[in-house]
Length: 298
Image 1 (tube, rainbow, N blue to C red):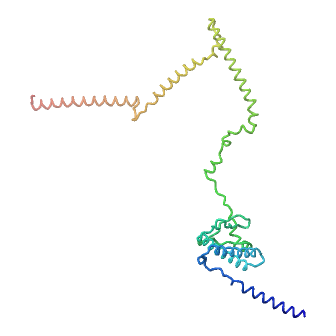
Image 2 (image 1 turned 180 degrees about the vertical axis):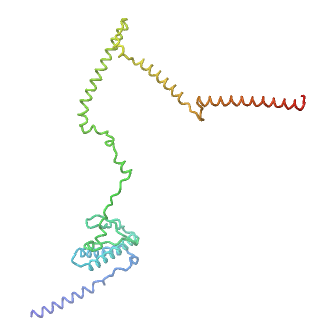
Image 3 (image 1 turned 120 degrees about the vertical axis):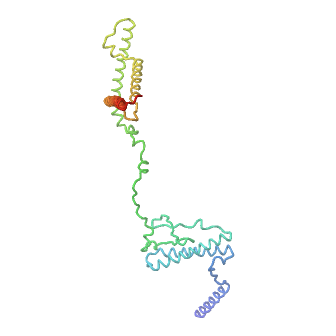
């Protein structure tokens, strides 16, 4: 009895399953080209389907035990799906839908830092690596940063580090210099004040002596130097120095003869004058002798 019921139940199950399959629509296949889709809702549906496939393959590629060849194949399939997703996103924008490319994920290295995706073709997103594929031989080197070369400092870099402390303007901020200079400054100030007070006393005594008609002592008089007299003397000395400098500023553009040269030149001139006079007298005598010999009277 139970066997017949099981048979009937199984027949009923097969019948119900067949009816449900008849009611179902035939399974739709994603268009090969995104440009063939004319409906925005369908384009969004196909994009969601591609996103689910990418999610499954990304979860699968996290397993490092799949082997190098399987990891490379999975990574190629994920990149192919990403390119297809980009086509569908572009088509969605053309149909008046939202722009999903603004919020697309960035590529990261093993440490999670965002890196630039190489794109030699210049079209669409570049080739990316996911999960365990980043640790494959030849791929890890792509994510390693090259060692920074230590550049030689230029003159601009050297001058850029120079500030007020380089010139010693902040030496007082540490407090050490203030402790050393404080006592020395007080000592110098007291010594200068004592000298000034002594000079004031000398000036007062000298003025009293001049008013009373008394003769001031030589020692005190030698110390008194009034500022006005000092200025006058300094001005006179300055004028004398300027006059001497003006006299010394004469510049000879041609060589000037000295005293011995002048004496020699005067002597030479005098010799030439005497010689010319002597030659003229001899010529006159010869002319008169010749005339007398020839009996020429003129």
